[in-house]
View 1 (tube, rainbow, N blue to C red):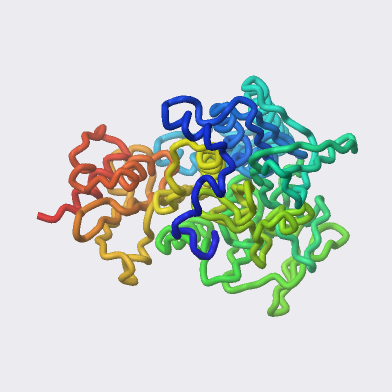
View 2: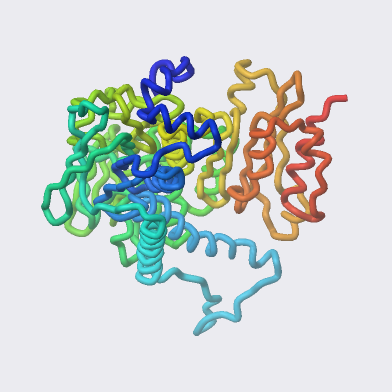
Length: 504
């Protein structure tokens, strides 16, 4: 974000580039832009394609420049494929409760009790197929809306014409050059996996998260370097799929930036399932061997394995685009500096998504893109509000969060109450054999409004929605508690948490 994202923005006439007559038409109830207003979007990920749909809805002529395929890395190499892989792993973790539920196998040959195994060739084929299908669906939707898609890369020219338009030079996939003029440019170029100089990926044994789908066989032993969200998700998934997994964490616990209780629970689950977690350990180098890899730790230990995933964050894809020459301010890390309506400091240039470093979530990228177009094209808009963003970690069980964190309450930054209910006491959870997880809810001490929550449970990504509504709409704990829930249901624990926060 920019250094002062909450400051009053410059006037719309100075920054948005929307013609004055268009704003007058919008005030009178007409379309907020004139037909033919030109928008060029660099990047076809969630921030780019959602912005394109909004801009087209508002009457603009839109070009999207994307070199990888519509949906960007989120669809082709990140969110969609990783969560598809995790969905397979999830089915295998569900079988943990089978004996308790009275489900048993008839056994395999020679008295083998029989187990469920993942066919990685089938799994990876399905992952790639679904990602491509999703990309093609987005491509088709944009084309049906009249949005022009250019397969190539864009470079923002530094000059501005006399009438205030900007220019983008595009190099197509075929090597041809073309120029696009635009009243508004949105940069949504995303990010790529961070590469360590001592752990250069080869796509076979040393891999980034974007290369994991090259594997057609289950790794015999996978070392995951990095215990953030990406590292934890892949480590948990491959552990569930049957691989031996070692997770190298430089911090005291996995998921160091997440709710402490949730992170401790997940680490306990990892260890219970046989994963080796090396806490307070840092990888110094990863080297290819004849039949695998050696991961050297800073304390001199060597972990030998068949494969290594290096999951140490991402790098914004902003170099070589002419952004600084065009007046766009970049941080030291290369992220584009934006305010809460996605404006950069450059005239008529906006930015959205992972290239801004705001929050590396597809939902946030999409909202940034929409906000950019609403603002740029003169429609009604509210600045980005990060206080109500929902996030989910697709481990098993999942971790879903929204609103303020417990640490903010414990430190005194937020004057609030906390309640913590183990999921195991829920009647529906008992029926399903769910024993690990909890529901947390946080309320404002003065008003009783719900200000945040954490759910650790299977499908927590679905269960967090009622708490997200409460946070967004500033509902009180009593209002949440007085909504009927199904009995028995996991959502009953959300209602119970709200009741425990009631203050007479």
